[in-house]
Image (tube, rainbow, N blue to C red):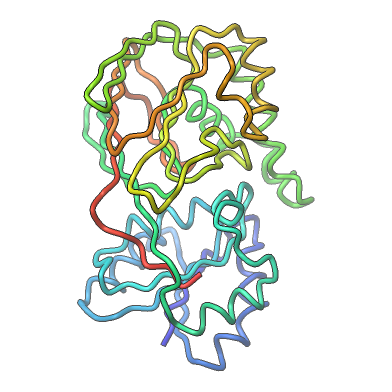
Amino acid sequence: MFHIVVNPTGASGKAWKQWELVEPVFAEVGYKLYRSTRKQGIEEICRKLTERGKLTKLVVIGGDGTFNEAVNGIADFENTYFGFIPCGTGNDLERDMELDSDRIKLAEKITEGVVRRVSDIGELTAEVYGRTIVRRFNISSDIGFGAATCAHVSQSKLKPILNRIGLGRLTYLIEAIKVCFTSKQPSVRITCNGRTRIYKRCLCAIAMNHRCEGGGFKFCPDADFQDRKLDVCIGNDMSRIAFLKMLPLAYMGKHLKLKGVYSERTDSILMECDEPQWVHTDGEVHGKTRRAQMRIIPEKLKLMV
């Protein structure tokens, strides 16, 4: 039995259409469908399904944000086999994991019900508006530029319009340019690998489990979601024009040798800012913080894709 979780309104309704496309595949092997609502979201549904101490074959249909909610809801990683059919704006997981673009074939692969690979999971701990939050992430977590861009995207009136015509990723680029010219560059104290460094004009500090975020930007082109490490990209003391010129190179993953760009590979990193900065996990913005710690947790996600 496969447990299918769908947000009917996800991706401007495309998630439900995706489900209708693959439903006959799952009908052949047996499934139970769960629709998320305002009262019961993806995270809560996945928690209830995976806290029983039994093997659970969980399949989520939606975007990277939906995947994030699901992973935050999983209560028992050891007994959870996870399948994922992408349908969103950024689709960075699909891109990095090289999932089959033919959704029928992808669904057929999932219904074989076997673990094909495992994935690391990141975790953010941050002080946000006077309270401590702990959130898992699949793709990335960062402060500054990336998180500020996500905050703007979540409020963008253009996003639903561009989503409907298949150009949703343009929203990220438009908002990224806005943030580039309006955001402040704080001083950030970064501790990892036994060293502490201060970046006095830090525009971005990104911790990544996967290579891409924001609809294809390869800020950490060598990131490997199975190596038990986070790859980190830091942009410091760059003019706004220089940073803007860096973005096309970052899309190709060819920016790491530029002046003002620094990289690290670590299993844990602490970022401390002199003034509050936006922070996010997988594009989900949690507010502003002065202190954020990211790490790879011991659990692994067992993937049927």
